[in-house]
Image (tube, rainbow, N blue to C red; front, side, top):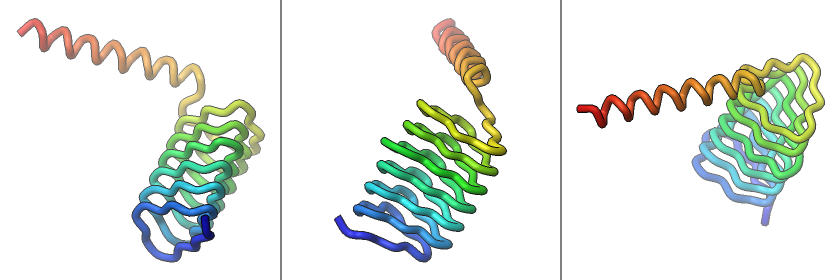
Length: 129
């Protein structure tokens, strides 16, 4: 697979290496992904690196690195995060400095329990009619 550099907006991208500079993509599937001052809605890769950008959902088989960035959900083996914020972080190993995780383990469990209870109540009320 080839290397693809994106400047501007892109939809769905599939390549060996993807480099995004001051641009965005809806989804990316690659071995390596690098983002600088840009964003991706959904990325699946072996390695993901983001500097001054954002991710919606990142599924990384090996390593995800964030520098002054934000992400909604990250699932990875190793997360290296500096001066960044993450909504949900699921990683085997985390190396962080100045990391803000909105939903840690306790918060995620509480959110899941509350969502399950709300769904059970909604379905119960619907069946009662």
